Length: 187
Image 1 (cartoon, rainbow, N blue to C red):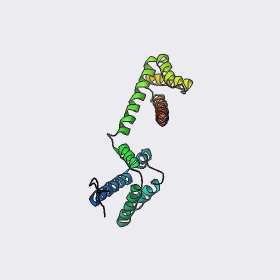
Image 2: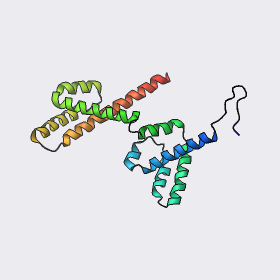
Image 3: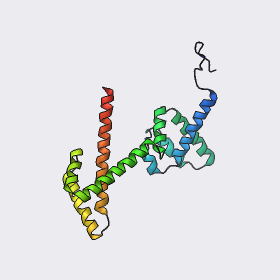
Image 4: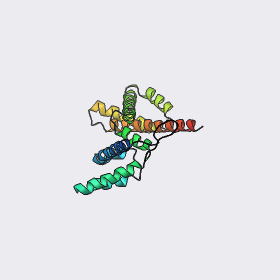
């Protein structure tokens, strides 16, 4: 029995229809998670206690057993906070905030790489000013090797490695900024 608040007339809890719709939405999310590749699944913010259930559901091939395990996975997911499920949905959504942040970070890394190759030490100084934890010698070596590869039409090994280094720097910087923001919010 749902019941109503005698003063306001509002219902105390969601209707059965709303509860059923919510459960079906979580089940749909569970189906999407099970269908993902392991690499894509690893990128999502999935709690550690859910991962074994997802992997077990993927392993089962019998139709009825798979369906039953999928229901169990959805039940386990409904026990999670709404924020956790929202974070998973956002990360899965190609147009979501997480996807936009990742794309912006890749564009920033590409921009820095092109500047480093074009301007050399000037751009390197700016990068090191922004990211003092960066390895100056390693970056300088990668810039030099990438320039040589371009000049000699060799495969772009150092060019790609330079991109990876810059991307890691940007990711570390974004994590540090997020921690600083969290510390400020706690104060």
